[in-house]
Amino acid sequence: MKKIFFLLILIMFLLAFMACTVQEDIIFDDDEGSSQKMQSSEQEKTTEDQESYDESLESREDESTEATSEETAEQTECEQSSELEYESSIESNVEEPIESSEEDSSSEIIDTPPEKITEIGNFSTVSGTVEAYDRLRQMSLSAAVYNIGSVYTDTELSSVRSSAGKIVLGGSLTYRNAAKLMKHYLDGSGENFIIDMIAFLSDQTALQNRNADIEKALRAAEILACEGEIVDIYQMQESIFHNLSGDWKYALGSYFTSMEMNNVTFDGEIYTAILKYEAIDFYNWDEGNSSAVFTGTIANIVGDISPKDLHQLHKAGMAQEFLSVGEITYELSWRLGDNAETAIQN
Image (cartoon, rainbow, N blue to C red; front, side, top):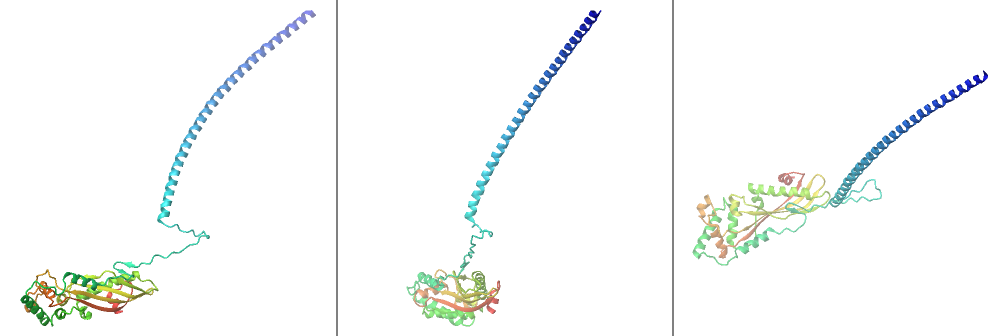
């Protein structure tokens, strides 16, 4: 009985042992399966991570490539910009002086005054004007030498001289100045004739011409004069007028004018100057003009005498061309923009 009981216990123990062994195998198998699953999952995750890493690496490489390209492009643009800025800087340095920095106390700022203006239009503070009458005399003498002989006969010359004498006599009232200059021509001395400038400028056309001349000089002086300094201003080229009429047309015809301004000053408000104004003409007659000189009442006295006729008297030595010169001086005082009359009256 005891043996049987002992055998039963042994059998139960063996069965329990076997059951435990089978359970451990099952658990082991489950653990091994789980482990394999875990390893498979880890491998899959590792693969995914690798792929993700590879993609990330490729993305970074692409971004790096793009960044490098952008940096290269930016560098190229920067280099081009730098080159342009450098070239611009060179050009700027050539064209314009570099201004000194106010903050740089070590650099000395040199204030260079602007170059003084010495010439404007037809006026200059530098002397060198060729005298008009010298040039006119040369022109006249080169055109017709006095007393070289005329193509007119003595009879024709006597007739011309008689008509010219009638100009002196008949024009002494209505053409007073024309008569004076014709008389000087017929006298044949060739000496300069002094124009009465007061009488000349009483002619409205001559007065307008003078005012136009002087106003040009005033505008030039307003530019050339410097405050606190005294300068002289010269007209470099004479003016010429062809617009006279009546008495002075027959006396002078066309004429030149010349000006010179001395002791020009400016006190910041008022300009002052001494102006010498000249009227200049070389009295001669045009050998190529056969038209009648005079019209109107005086023509009834002297006839249809022409410039060609009167010129023949010079060539025959029966009259002589001469220089006519008139000069008048004004003390001027004016403000910026004033006209000639105001400058003279002040």
